[in-house]
Image (cartoon, rainbow, N blue to C red; front, side, top):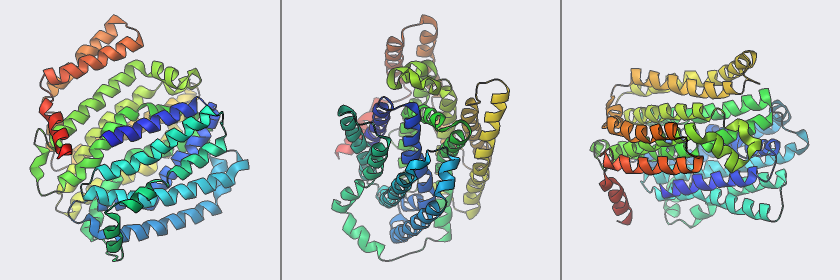
Length: 471
């Protein structure tokens, strides 16, 4: 959790520094080329390998297959991108004079990210949770340090920032090279074992469900960049960046759910200090940050990023609502997939998101045009509504088809106390009309006190986490 906080925090601060160094238009170019496009292509080049490798019992058997497959897919993706780069960059409204730089940065990022992600997956399956966290944190910290230095000496070149982002993705390979687990893993990678149908079905289902929000984000950024311009893609990126606090809690839940749920000790879901207790704590954080964004998004955007990025604050609350639904959906689907015994259970939880994903760009484009014609400015709100609409729909459909709804019952345990812990500070914020700084402090303090005072969370949960870490 600490490493995820470090990774998310460093990423947030990097964007903060960068946004205050360049114009919104330049910020849009950097985030699209250095983050969004490599991130979207990485989903294709790694497919479901991370999820397969995360299986606590059998995942590491397929490490060699995952590495070889990633290399092949990255090579094919790079070739296709090279052949159609001019058309792709023109569609995204990127300035053509630096297309060579864009292509190089994307390809370098793809190769590095794909290799690192395979190692993250196998470390995760071995329950070495600190190793994946370190591999995620290293690039973010390196970018933050480099961007701060560049800003300090007055360098604000878009090209240099893109190069920094690309090269930072290679640094985790140094950590992998010196890891004591790497020699044994590379030795086992010589043997290429193809996953069984059941394992491949498990990995595919977890992959599709886990990457649904990523597909939504990346498709929306592409549509926004095409329909409204790269500057508005930058505003959309700032909105998603502001939601980093919620994504941290979700990412932590994503990291631990499959390895813990696929272990032989399924009772961990119901233990107060086990997976169930930790997940309830993370769910409380998601709701807390969602309300914080609803109340103070405009203040946070203007204070952190400057008034130039004010359009990014207007619809953040819509994203916050979507992430609440996604937390519920993902936890429910991952536990059911981890406990599934028949292929039919994998298929149902794979087909639904798989059918929804291709609709995202078309619905986003339609809603932007619809809201524009209805008088909502240029229709920017359509991207936010589309994102949340698909998350809500996916959650409802997942609840309807899941055989075991006990994960929801776990999340809703003592929910009245959670509601009370959120409602009291929310009412005070609404009626006292405090300044944002005092309001944020009051809201956080009251929530932190009430969440334990009401008994929703037990202090033993926190103590247990530190004791296990120390052990």
